[in-house]
Length: 388
Image (cartoon, rainbow, N blue to C red; front, side):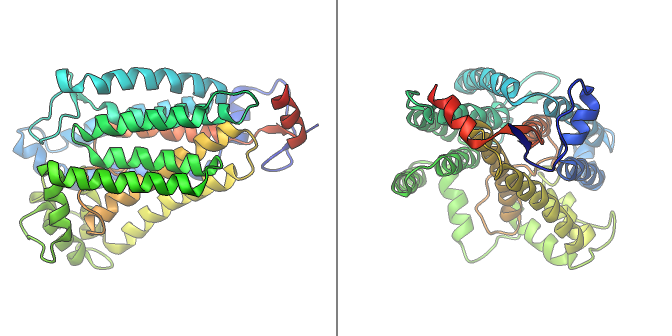
């Protein structure tokens, strides 16, 4: 006996793919992603011309590139949402293997583009950042391992996923990329908690993070400089945080007007890490609240739909992807308002960046595939199948 988790619409045998996809997809979350990308293009029109002029490109060079990257990301996202969870899992595991190898080879073949952190491969026509694609692939692979541990006689998937997370955190910290390392470890902790982990183990992980942070502070000038800048009671007005803070203050409730902002001429990362400062200055608190609401809508709706999910893998992977998406947005905006130390993390679908927006499209595509309405067996049927 089966039932629909979201609604009472029965399964329709022989129904075409597109009508079935449209009937079962979370339309609110899907629409929110498209709106976020549209806002990103709008902000790019204001934020990117100064950098384009500095690099001797046409004024809207970066906006045009973002449109291409974003279009590719949205098409990829929609295609992934049409896949069944088992296919998403297989592709996620393969992607994890590929991105793990790429991450491990970064110290030998990667470049830092003068930013002090070796995070990219230069491809001539662009760049590729493995850590962006690693996040959704890791979440899916770790969820698969944890779900396998629920089966009778299954492998110690939780332990394997923990060792895997530790290796990745070390590789990311060596770049150094402490922001991505923190986000990846957070995703693992959320899935481990949802999977029924004892709170004592999670407290132990928190202790390891504190110890690792202390070690990084005393041995990494890059890390120490950012922590010291965050803890300092005074803000240097000539730093990126100083410019961003002043822009947010100047914007007020309704902004200074479209195209009238000045922070984009001072911030080298106005179109990427600090694009929320451009939004706050030119459009004010109103647009910032709209952006916050869209991220909250996607995250909360996804978690709400996953509450009724009975497949352990789908529940774990979906929760990890939803929380990683929401927390990445929170970190980006938290840095701009000085709630968090600077981490160099993009705002999903809004910031400029090929790797970032395409990886976000893949991650949201997988999340929307996991949260689609589908017939599910009674809980007793699942328990009997697992015993077999």
